[in-house]
Length: 495
Image (cartoon, one colour):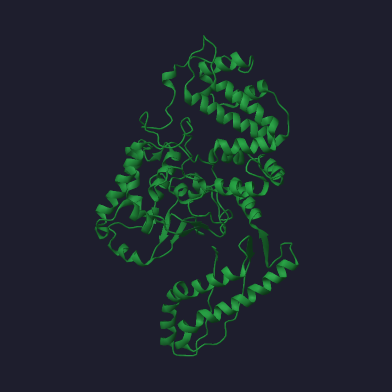
């Protein structure tokens, strides 16, 4: 079982000399990591049932008095006994009073998963104490929990009203569309709002089916953009509780498309053929050859993700948009698993420029840049938003902005990313023959904490590990980072 402690404090009173006190202080970090935390892990495994989630605001214990020379030998056991006693007492109180209290809360795992799902929809992040099983996405974990509760093809009714309320937010609707698969969204809609699901399926099938004989072919990107806006409109209708028809839904979707998208005469003709009156304003002609590409610099036929959602050119966040993140929005910091990405900062401007993702010291395709940073850290093509807090900061994307998980990274892009990691190894001679995956595992995929300083700068604290001794031979600095498009300075503590 996995347990998470947000912060622990170890207070010792020493009856000894100042020199002994300094020596003890120097030993405590190693003592905590190597001896104390494993002992706490065993106690928590024994005390907390596997099918519940125990949340405690604090647990204060007194471990007694020990001889200094017996601290390492007897200290972990003494702390473990005190924690076990206090923990069992807290559990008994929480079981007797199921309602949340100031001391903590005991709840089933399914409730924890529901809370993580809605927290993610609202923020783009996961609760700090919620960890996904290795190799599992949030969508997989949510689907598994809901299947166990309501059957493999069902969605628990308990999520209907909370989801309807959440969908009143445009941000939540965009995040559900951009971060979850079409299959997940379709199953959600079919279980909770079946009439709307049938309406959407009919419209989508018509769009993808044969058009009328005189119609010009509709570019795939135009269909994909319309379908995304269609989902946005469907979810908005679900939130409002209003009934609709296919013609009304198609017409409202058309009106909400960006002006450039409404210049697609082939799409307008197709919609008018099937739903007369849905595109009242005639669109000026635009040859299909002028449709913007989904990926700047992408080569046909080399998409590797399944299947990428074609998107029009991404809107560029205002320079310094990340500065809008206030101390009130990040009071206790964000916990990361890819803090080591900061090691790559000297290579990123030229890397993004070479791929056509940056020009004139600005990112022109920030979503692709985010996915590439995730690929650099993990080797994965799909970039879930809850793993993009640090990449968003490095790309000057507001932390609350929904982004697309699957942008369809190309072979050319991933090859360049692997070449970047090889270049890092070549310049950092201490790594010798380290492979890109070894670099990821030892340095890039590193836990850390990101917080906002009172002066407005960001602070990244990286969890130290034994092989960090190689950082002494790193040929570039990492203590202060500010890429050309970043308005805020990122300070790094890694020692």
